[in-house]
Image (cartoon, rainbow, N blue to C red; front, side):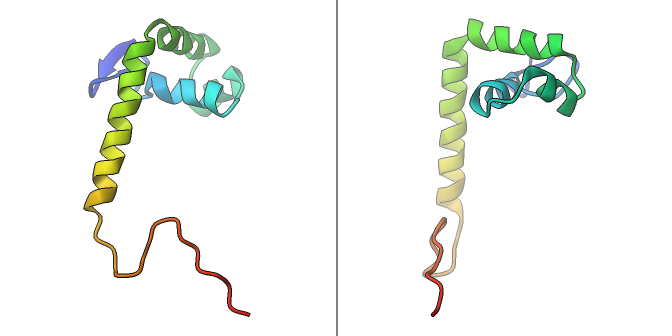
Amino acid sequence: MRDILDEPHINGRRIPVLTIAERVEGRGLKPQTVADRHDLTVSEVYAALLYYHDHPREFENLRREREQIMTDVEDEITRPEGIVPGFTPPEEE
């Protein structure tokens, strides 16, 4: 694995290790499915998972950084008055 943009990626690719881990372990996709969708070998998927599990603190910190970035972006968004993210108005009868 190698760091591109300060985040571990699969060598020679721009696919973050965390993306692979989230798809296999977070979404429950099979390693073969993830490999097929990203034009990887199953070995590359398992290597990414191994790296992910060998460096838990690194990925915990990375998740926190991503969450903070998203919070900062959401705080900077200017919305029209009365518009709240995630709000769905009730249907009219």
